[in-house]
Image (cartoon, rainbow over all chains, first blue to last red; front, side):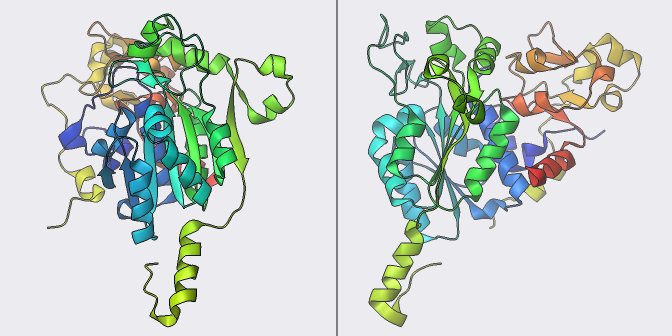
Length: 281
Length: 111
């Protein structure tokens, strides 16, 4: 009897690295499954994909996925991804980052990659703290939340990742939660298809650190909270600001057409150097 | 030397410990129908399961239950409606459903 394996198995480095290091109930595995299903539904081969990450829980993802991968310095995933994309524009570059990785240490890289509108898909997994190092507060930790470095409650407001990157000029900005996993598959697929800088913020529970410190219960309870406290974009448009306070708005939050950076760079080289231009396509 | 591709790794030797009991064997209903694997659409890969309980909590038909070893098992395989929610929400890639690939390809083309 042949063993029946998850079909995602063909994209995983299953023999070497599994079971993975993420805690029981951590949502990063669900996001990883969504990325696999989105890529699979598009029919892309493994050799076309370049997966870049920095440091952190989320950034362990390239260790488990059998694409071309790059595991780089803390916060610098997009800096490396930009270099990869310019050197070989034919690759589909995906940058996976955690909230601290993307918005604190790599905050400048994120906003400038969005401003350039370079054709990179970035998946920002937001679990509201730095999970790997013991649950310190991150730029997305909400007000009054308890973490290892804010034991009496956080006094800073958190970032709205999607509003930030939408304002910075990203082509596609969407928010998903790991509870709404089918919706997340579709949003990641749309982001991968979109030409230009596209962002999907995936909200994920961290039951070990953030959930325990704030007494939010186990992973199941945290996912139920996501279900109860989130609304779609179409529903949110009909709600008053009072009703919307404390709610997570999910879905496609911004989508626009803008010139893409590698195209502009190639045009520039061809204009300046004429036929001598040697720009990879 | 080229790196391994997925086509090679899907077929031959799966990372299953042959000593590990099949998931369905722990459930009395599954055992009653003889061959647990063929009776059930849903399979839990015990080696990778970490017992977070997400599949058990969000199964609309309560097909799955937590076992005594804090891992999920297929308690009522006959009730499975193949909605694939457990397989998609499993963070550990431990839940699989037969014939899932075709279904997801179809949905991906539609969405």
